[in-house]
Image 1 (cartoon, rainbow, N blue to C red):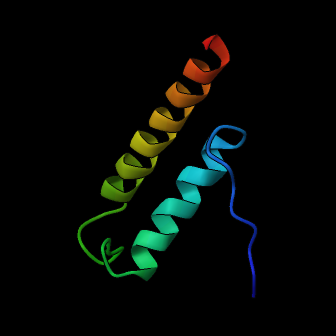
Image 2 (image 1 turned 120 degrees about the horizontal axis):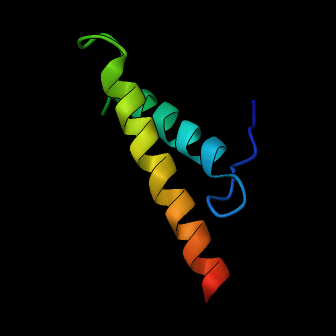
Length: 60
């Protein structure tokens, strides 16, 4: 099963989601530790970072 990798500047939400999923697959982030708020927070941080990157690249 191959999944196309989202580019962070064109699809920040998809790229953030894929990054969280890969962290879970790699065992670096566990959905079994606590509630989902930690995973959601990490996703939101990545998304915000990618969206900031996107807006910075538009200005440049």
